[in-house]
Image (tube, rainbow, N blue to C red; front, side, top):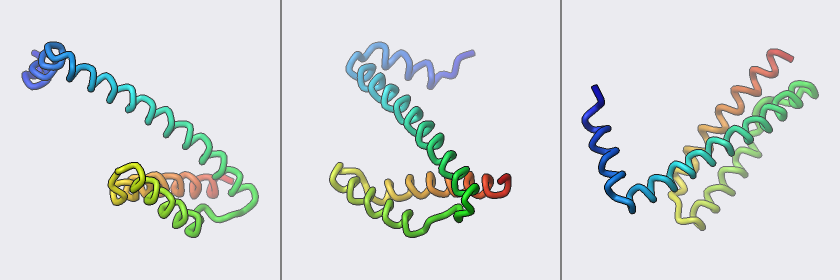
Length: 107
């Protein structure tokens, strides 16, 4: 039996073309974000493999600091909460470092 909330939500968006249009745009943006993150991680994986090959450390705190500062500034310019942006970037950086550490162990 279908979930009542899901069924109500679906019929609301089908009945409301404005809401349906917003949601379609959100879905498209979400898809683009996933593809962009996938590409970013493909590149950072190559970076991790390279770092392991030339024996560089998995993390680069100076670069991370510069990236956080740069993206906070971009966030402010884009009217996006810089705290949210920093948390999001930190999450990504931590995952990249984890992958780089794994590459170091395998290399």
